[in-house]
Image (tube, rainbow, N blue to C red; front, side, top):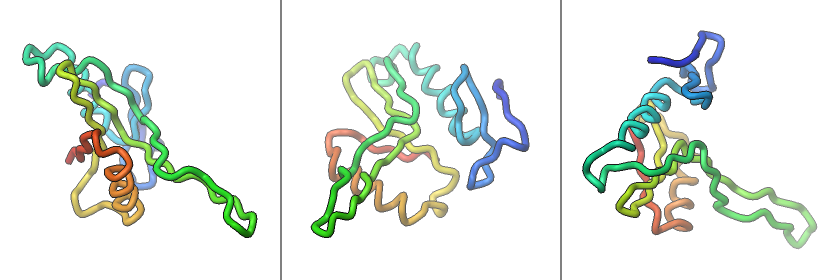
Amino acid sequence: MHGIFTDKMRNKYNNKKCVIDGIKFDSLKEGRRFRELKLLRSAENKCDRVVKIITQPKFTLHEGFTDKSGTWHIAIHYIADFWVFYADGKEEIEDVKSAKTFTTNVYKLKKKLFKKKFPNLIFKEIY
């Protein structure tokens, strides 16, 4: 894979990080998915043609607030891997996963909250 990565560049799940086109990715698999999405920019089929890719989009799932005792509670955010826009108007949120069995409870909760708050966006896990 074309990109820059070293054994020193690892994240909390022990994935090798990489850099492609100046963009840092948390895993080689995520970098490969980015390359696939870039290739879909030239797809002949309008349904498959990608017109825009946003990396690491941040979504607010719950606003921060102050409770009755005056304690501030920070907002809850979800950061996806990709927000993909297709030529036919479809939008998908993608999260690249290493394995179906390796998802945290926090991720599962944020996924549920995301689907509730943004029902018009397609949520897609890439394995």
